[in-house]
Amino acid sequence: MNETILLTVLVENTVRCRGLKAEHGLAFHLQVGRQSLLFDTGQSDLVTENARLLSVDLTALDAVAISHGHYDHIGGLSAVRGLAPGAVLRAHPTALIRRFSRNPNGTTRSVGIPDTIQEITPPDAGPFCANSSPAEVLPGVFLTGEVPRRVNFEDVGGPFVLDEAGTQPDPIEDDQALFFDSREGVVVLLGCAHAGVVNTLRHIRELTGGRPIHAVLGGMHLLTASPERMERTVDALRELRVHKLGPAHCTGAAATARLWSEFPVELVDCSVGTRFVFHQ
Image 1 (cartoon, rainbow, N blue to C red):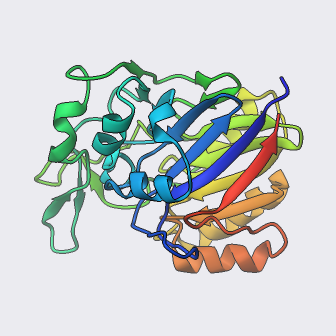
Image 2: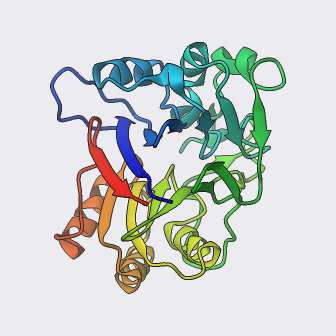
């Protein structure tokens, strides 16, 4: 394979380019030769406006892959499907269920699929392909499927629950990452890494036969990480010798600052409008 992959950040919490806008969410566009896909859709139709300003053609999408079923990753799906109704939607079977987060006062709030996109989710409209195991989305580009939870210092990153009463913990089993190989090593895109950054990267190493991890970009959900978790996460990233590290979205300001301090050479910007080029 000898393809160039152009990766564009369409939605993220921060923006540094004139004319573009940011929101709490994430969306990556990948152009792989003549084919393209969107990994997550942000929380609104902002993904389509930023795509227009960045000359990214969403009408040509071959696939839309969802990292997990939280509103800030799936909320823009209706707008995207309106532009590319033939694009195959790929997600874990449980990505489209109702889910909640527990507030400090014991009440809950919905954090799952918005009511506004219920009508365009399977089986009502558009092609859909569910996966819980690793799956190839485009040639050479894969979803991890469910990530094994093996290390004891990582958790889902918050009080996520499956019921409005807030009594049933949500393991967020639909959490998955996107990855592809490049000449320099494997490139990993994280939605939120609710399965844990270390769990995810070690799983991808297994799936790729021990290939080195070249770049890790996206949300790491370290907002509530304990000091022990941060220490062990830093140790794991150092052990993996990641060359490009782009913490984004839900990583958290304190965790991002720590990563910038520990990896000043490897850290890269991952705000709206940022582009990366990789060669397979």
